[in-house]
Amino acid sequence: MASPSVFKSPGFDFSNQLRNNFLAEKGLPLPKATSTGTTIVGCLFKDGIVLGADTRATEGEIVADKNCEKIHYITDSIRCCGAGTAADTEFTTALISSNMELHALHTGRKPRVVTAMTMLKQMLFRYQGHVGAALVLGGVDSSGPHLFTIHPHGSTDKLPYVTMGSGSLAAMAVFESQWKPNMERQEALDLVISAISAGIFNDLGSGSNVDACIITANHTEMLRNVEMPNERVKKERNYKFRRGTTAWKKEEIRKLVIDEQVTTLATGDEMDTS
Image 1: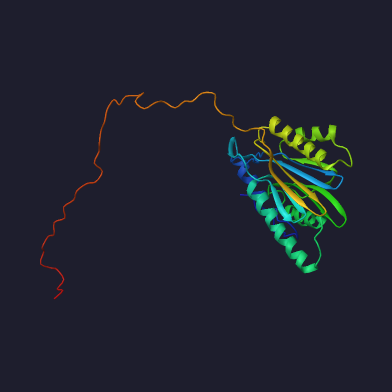
Image 2 (image 1 turned 45 degrees about the vertical axis):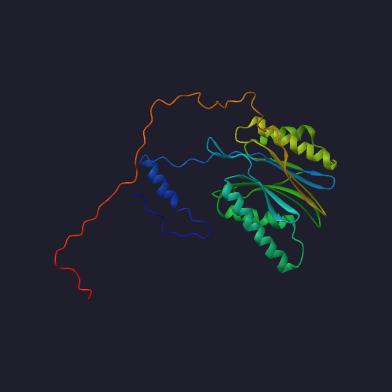
């Protein structure tokens, strides 16, 4: 049996690595990383930020939810798109949203986007990637619009347009070819819809509808199902059969209630109740 190190260094504890190596030598396969699917994007425009996400949630090869919500609330002027493990993204953003409200009450000021980004990256780095949350954070504060990506291990990027998730390459191809500085509101929204649609139609882990969120200095507008490219069409034929089409071959009625009779046996040891 492998002996653990007796030296306890400050910081993270990696003593389980010895256990994992021992189990691997005995033939026990190590758990594999879960493959997740999503397309989330964001881009700057003249007056603020536009965020976008698809609405498909998967469990392996199964579509678990066709219309889930992946754009999470942080503050009134900050939103966060989540890709990865649904529970991790939802609870991580909810926790940071609570901390941002406490921070605003403590300081008496409107919280900044970089504050939310710092809280998120520090939390994710603390768990070394085991919290499976890949995030696109966007918002507008006193210093202007800001857009960040936050990876599950805690690294961050600040760019004018970003994509994350399994459909990010298809979405990035749209941004690389069509994004330009100082776009108008509708132009940026159309670009985000096109980027999410590219992920929906080119990535099996992404699908269903397009959600968008437009954030400016004075207003935040959530556009739920702004585009629905996969609506179920009406079937060309009606498959209802008229009554009596299929005849009964046999009829059997089973009685499920069984009658019981309870007989009291007099043994002479009954309790005296007189």
